[in-house]
Each structure stands twice: as structure tokens, then as C-alpha cells.
Length: 171
Image: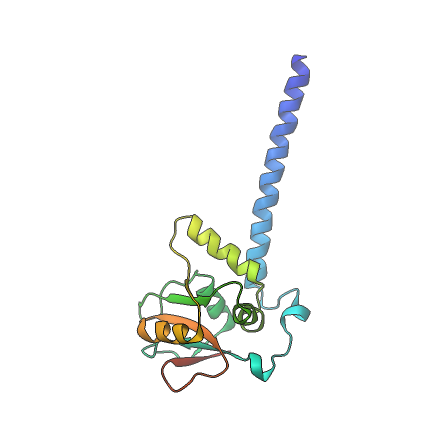
């Protein structure tokens, strides 16, 4: 009887380690996927944009740069980049997960799936590193928040009305 219990504990011990390794490798694979230049689901994500779904990345007018690379933009929206080159803290503004504009921005501009970005935000928030992005409800609120927050960055559908904010190009 004692040998059977010992065998059971050994099997349980190895099962826990296998489970832990599986979870850690899955996180490592998802990070590598996010940093890879091409996404494995590119047929889904690289759908052509129609004129009504063109997104503009906007920033506070005091920002020195006019363009960002896709990797820089991903780093900013996944909350890994915390400061602009001049040292100003980055404040990320996003729409709610349920809004079609949010999903469209992630798929067409960031070339990421919504759950991938949400997983990175949750890891950032629940590990105690910092707080998540600021959630806004409308395009007007997005424009006002980005315009009034030094270091602010966000996105809107269509063009930018007037020159209230800086429109960044993505290379």
C-alpha cells in the first residue's frame, strides 16, 4: 500500500511539472508570434481595408516623431514601451473590446488578434507592473483625450477632422 501511494505521488509530481512547462512554452510561443514579422494567420488578418474601415493612429501634437514601425506600434499598444524617446510617459487610449472599431484596428493595423493583446494587458495589469490602457467610448472622447494628454496615443476610424492631433504613419 505504501509503494502504491508513493507511485501515485510521483506521477502527480511529474504531471504538475509537465503542465507548468506546457503553460510556459505556450506563453513563450505567443510572445514569439507577436514579435514575428509575419503572422501565421495572415490570410485572416491581412484582409484588404475598405475606405470606410481605414484607421488613423493619432498622438498628442507635441510628439516629435511623424512615423512608427509596426513593431514600435505593437510595443506601445501592448504596454511594453512606456516612454517616448524624449522621456514623456506613453498613455494608450483604446475603445472597448466590444466595439467593431477596436477589433478592426487590431486586425488591420496591428495585425494581432484581440485575445492576444488582451492577454498581454492582463499580464501587465495583474503582475502589478502598471495599469492598462485608458478605455474611451466614442471618437470624440478619443480625440479629446489624446489631444489633452501629453504622450497620448490612440486610433480613430477614418480621417482626422481638422489638425487637432498628430496623425502618425506606420511603416
